[in-house]
Image (tube, rainbow, N blue to C red):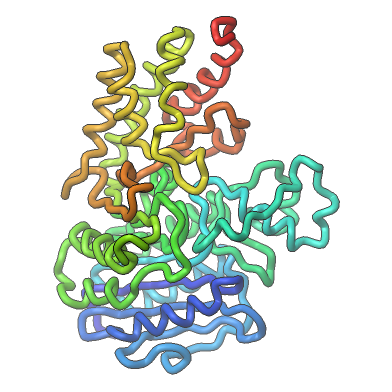
Length: 421
């Protein structure tokens, strides 16, 4: 097949409560479909006995008309299944640029909720310690996505980040599996990186996820907040690429962010939504600024005024469905305003400057709906406050390369200081 400008690969893990949404989204893709410049291919694992099918999306086609292969039952939580799809798509439909979209449930780097669901579904759940038997707040997850098998999940006290959850196999891909899958398959692309990696899933635009996957894609596109079940408006997403396939990936992501927000804008009845795009080429600059900021905060955390300046803003920082996910810019802004320390003010301002949106900046685009999301600026960071610190966090690449986790521990330790009484 001739090399086109773009190939868009959408991996729909629908063997769960999002099954009907997947069929509808394939219908949205078919409103535009593939053309002389763009290939649109998808793999959709449905709930029940339908199994998994591959699609080459044509204009006016959709589900099931555009199905080109029946794979039978697959496990979307198996790294091999995703690798097989991406390798097939890249080699069968060669292009100058590639966009990968991972569609399913997601929770950023931390996956307590999907873990709870795995526990609930597992016949072995009674083996768990009482502390691990949390209630699955299913109503709270709207469109939300990796431990290797249910047996491995059940061994863990705190679960890994999860995306692409498969109810039938009770499996999901973990943080390291996702990195390995995307690293391996990106090598097949012209620049050894995907142009755009999109998460049509909840809570995925965290600094931790972006840093974990920084070498796999030029731009990562996702939401700070949960997504409604309708997810992305695929006719507009595919339409933006088809309308100008020579457009820079960053400019395309701006259009996708705009169209996503507009698709939920119903005036006073709008849902609280966010979408943002980050430039991984600038994540080293962001890491450096955050690391210096964290070092200054840690150094001053034994100072009463510094501790209380952080404590005083906790409830004001923009938070999301997981209250431990805080908007990074808003965190730095409030500390810059409230702290009496020049070092803290200056290091906070440096973080803010790095996060200013722009074509060649770390934050390429960021938008939101409703006043409740007014201080969402595109990327979140973990801040548990006084809540139990999840030890899994220390295993993330971001925690290994920055001193943010050291600051978090110093902050929690400061609660034991006599002057807190």
